[in-house]
Length: 417
Image 1 (cartoon, rainbow, N blue to C red):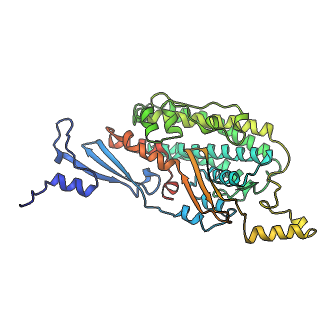
Image 2: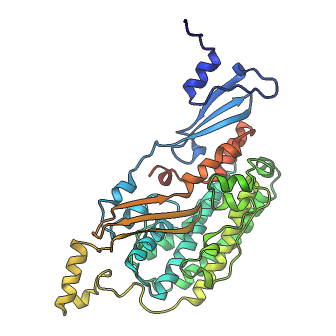
Image 3: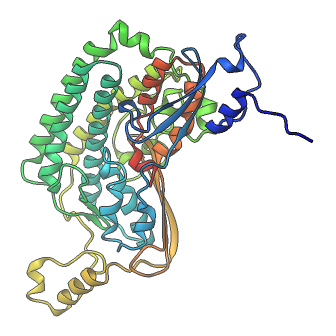
């Protein structure tokens, strides 16, 4: 029996990867629809993200994020690295929040080791994590401004993030991909005068947030581009595993720093910022207010930073001080074994999760008792949050697709790992 020839719309739908559209809204015929690609090389996709858009006129009917253009193999690479080398790997997954990546990895390793950290190491980690959250959100303000045509906001954001990166360089030696947090603590203590540096940063950025409000929050064109645009409901966000500002913009007060406290977050005061509608405006307001909440946390850390060692004094994990190597044969042996064999972690598996600037980042780690992970898997917030993009784009205009995609704040290095 001869096969029925396909219509042009059927052929186009099959080539696109979308199922053939049968329901036609608003009286359009199927042939009036068009499949277009945004990305993978597009300034508004924030990396090599391809978004397939099915449109009718200017309206987005359906969309499909296509990933895999930046596959780095970082999870597989982790199996070839020692636990001490692992932080150099995970810090590169999300170049906007490298210290949060290092933190979740170290928490997983320390859980398997059954290691307890000194108080100063815990509070230093909290300080650096919150400064990293401020830097990441400020960077998002810059890129969001660029996407919506505000080059002033782009310049302001890069300018203000620079202060935080300069401090990171002073503490860790690097502006990005710091490799500062290590299993057992941090690589080095804070430099002299760090309190003044940090106070200057938070005081300045707190004032600059007022500039952001003057530039964007009350600006009528900006408000028309984001208010009521890209709405996602709380039940949809939960069903799609969205976390971070996307979930909190819907009114769900889920923040791991409060819901499942780690480090010393249960000892500091801060508010979990939530929205009401779940639109692009709420996601903007959540992030700008989270900058202020992080400043609040940082000031408490500056006031209450304990003294003492900045890494665990366990010779099986932490190399001995250089001076002891000249005096003690045992210290020399520990130093040699740590740098040649690495840390041997007891067999087992664990999952650690923290609240990164983009949401829940988790590290599932399996150890077979050797000095290298048997398996590592990262639960990346950008990867999970991208699932909510088709819901937010449905029914939006093409021009809104830029604002909505920007509000997800994806980092593709963390998606394609």
